[in-house]
Length: 89
Image (cartoon, rainbow, N blue to C red):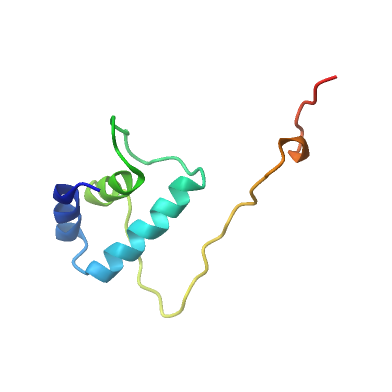
């Protein structure tokens, strides 16, 4: 993670706690296969991508009165069990 990105993101999101939660959730999404909302440059890690999304205003937050669980897409461990997958003869 690049410190100058962290400083810029803290200027956008004033609360460090909110920023940590936003970045950790977005990094989890990116590692699960979600696409970045920015143009990814060489040598950018997942945290750098998430921080840049915050800086550019593409990733925001909404305060809620109760916890909303993040939906998680199913992961397929065996490629043979993928729906509509082509199998070798």
